[in-house]
Image: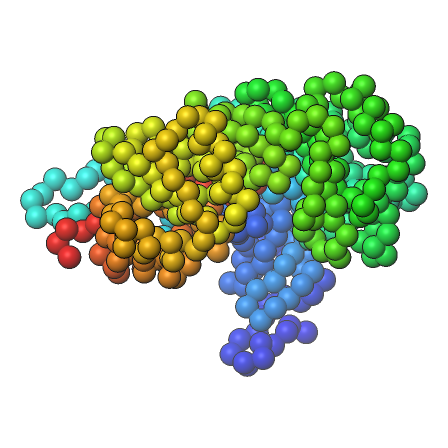
Length: 485
């Protein structure tokens, strides 16, 4: 029997556990193929646009369902063999079966679709000619969305590994979670991780087994080792190891340190973080240095950064430099501008901009991040940058009361986008330019709509592939104040 929609408006043309031929018309936000069976939508992991596939329905909802790919009947020319041996089990990557050129096209389309469908904004493609006629107003041609900037080598780019540890069949394992679960797939090699990170993870797991260190069990909240976190300065080669434990002490810790130093001589810092909470959050509140330095160092462009165990630092420094250079280009700095960097974090964009601005003011709600930002400014001898702790929508008006009026505002918010109060604050400040750095096209489009309503024109957007082989895309967008309003 076909399933009848509760609203009694149509018959769903598929049944759970039934097998059907689906035409794949697109890619969803989780990297799954978007299929159609008699007009009904099925999301199918592993399927690509242009393909025809045999699929088994595994879950049904009112308007759509989920299917398991059984066989590809018509193969997309963009399909490639994923080189990772655990790709189909691991949930870390979603797009290894799509050619890299195909990934870049898909990520640009994600941005375009969000701008058009969510933001209701007109988009102009980079191949389209600009209007030459007189009387065309700023923004009437639509937003120019450039092709996604990718990597020449889109592998081994991650400078940080965060590997959960568990006990499986009596053995300590560490890897990444299987898709849609908390079941850990044991992993010794990850093709998007820096090779040195892989080596450190392998050796720490081996040492832990050798010493009988217990693995954490989420269900019972017992066991010691929860996560192994490794950070590497790609330019400096300096490495930090963080052991996250479900306990205050590590048995035989001096022996453990000796073995790590012997087997991993490149490690400059060994830290211990305590997390005894029943939570999915990796880090607890207390971190101490077991051996070595408190910080390691790396560079983005010619800016040097100190990185601690808890510091947020972009995981792909090569593409981060590309991203920030585009933000710098869009800011249009001549050396005379006042710039405000909202959501400044540890000051990565602020310091990048400071060498080309009169003064940069950064604001961030996380106090530890501001402490890192001030330390990094001092490290680079940048004196034309100031940082404040607090909500941007509260700090920025206070700056304005003190006579600080920005020419440019830069925002790089979390995935949820800008707080509505911050958007209103920016509109009140009326900077000549706003540069929006986004990690979520959907919330980007939503926020751009409000800024356009408030008198700004979105002129161009540049997608940047920060995370090859995953569904994530960053974008830098330039908004210019409409002087006619």
